[in-house]
Length: 429
Ligand code: AMP
Ligand code: GLY
Image (cartoon, rainbow, N blue to C red; front, side):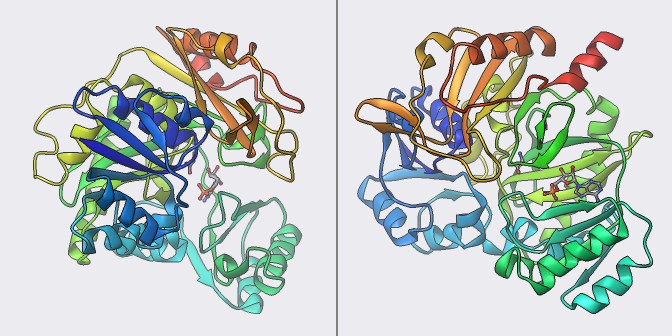
């Protein structure tokens, strides 16, 4: 069968690489893909944008694609799955109605409180003066979120009330996030350790993937500005078996039941960004309607079951009949980024050392790369995710950083401490 992957990031490279390993998959098409997917056996890039729904449907029909997997949130929120379904095509991901869980923070907060699913207390505002008056009643830090999609940059944690007011002014009065920020959610600050909990959902059943944790900030020690993610690892030791059970019982199952009760059929990956407090209680920080990037790269490296089978089981009622099988070893993915990211950065820098970095315990996934005259050059903020595996998170991290050390380009940088919390836990136990 042929499978189509929509997207061009590191997540989509990992999805395409995993799919292509299956004997059942004759070819993986990636629209539009990157230099990494271009170089994978059995994988072909097709230059169609993720928002060109007509072009994508036409491609899927022309190539007799049996299954399409949508990587990024923008086409999901825009209704790409609804469009594929209108043409009788199997497309893995939630319809636009379900994708609101990521597309609107106000929708999600209202959903969570109505279904009594644990999350930070909040209020939503469109009016600056009302928001400012509310903020003046709070004790900092104050969490302010643009309602809509803002490429991971729409969350501001204000350390003082003055900062919070200035943020509200920028977002609600000056339109810093455009249409995504005409409404804001202001919520209580949660303390604890974060984890990413990603599950496969077929409308009624929920099967979790391996746990993971990402590092969202740019600098070592989890400091500096927020980014799309500077690295991730799997499993996440903060998700103990007891925490795992609570997340399923208090968050994932009630969420899918709540969606059903609200008349929303949700098929696809469901990603809960969680805060786990010191007592092991999980709270929802956010939902994503897709796999995480970079979490997917270390997660899929550990997946032994065929990815196409897992997705197809959500169409024929067999999700969960066979357990998903994982490599017990740990994985760590280190993102290499362009100098300046998450602010302005240059592109078009030639990358060297890619071949030397790869080995049996290291895989280099491409994100912002393209081919230019036969050379791989940078083409985005997050450029690569180098995944290493080993018997512990420490060993996996050493493998990943050995790979990273072989790769260079002008201005590239990376964090040197991906996985440090898990390594501390390993070493404490
Ligand atoms: P989000 O885009 O909603 O995942 O938020 C980005 C990051 O902001 C999260 O990964 C957290 O580190 C932080 N964050 C968001 N909401 C809260 C909150 N209510 N309390 C503490 N930290 C938060
Ligand atoms: N790594 C966070 C995300 O994919 O949203």
